Length: 134
Ligand SMILES: [Zn+2]
Ligand SMILES: [Zn+2]
Image 1 (cartoon, rainbow, N blue to C red):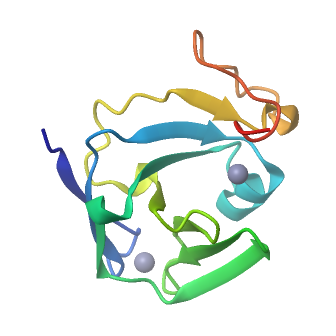
Image 2: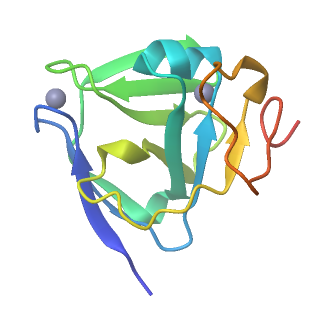
């Protein structure tokens, strides 16, 4: 069962298409995501690379660490993708950039050690101090 949706940045220059079937979506409270988004946390969605394609790929690239390239729109600044260099088989996009954000379950929270006050833990959802693999 597919769940194909489109998304993009604030100005509309960068666009993508994604199949959300079997996705994993979580909130990341790490300092890099906080700084990058200017928000308390970033909700991001992972799918296999075969379920994602850029319609218009953003040209903005920034690496806060050797782990990933953060891709963003140079026109409007919207963060779109965390491109993990050790996770070549998966794609991670900023969930809130989907045109239709309905019915997307958040199933974990990571890097809760840097959670901002006021960003309460989601009830019943696994919480990880750092990444879910540590
Ligand atoms: Zn844009
Ligand atoms: Zn993060």
